[in-house]
Amino acid sequence: MYNLNKLKGRIVEMFGTQRNFAKAMGMSERTLYLKLDNQVDWKQTDIVKACELLEISKEEIAEYFFTLIVQ
Image (cartoon, rainbow, N blue to C red):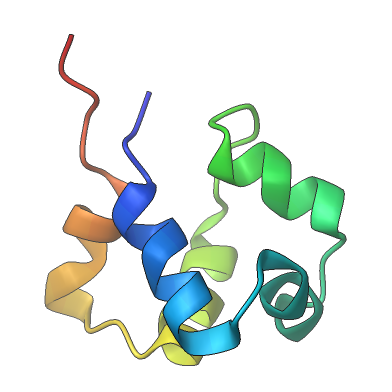
């Protein structure tokens, strides 16, 4: 499981709502919710598009998408 809190914050910062971001991504709100809740994996193509929309550099991908939840 990944900690996607930084990604969620960036979405709100750049798009105001997850709904607006989902629309920009070309996916349903439900699909985005499932991805942000670790129930559905992010496809590489989705990560690339999200990074373009959210202005996330290649070097930052790991901290936004692949930070493990430490228990």
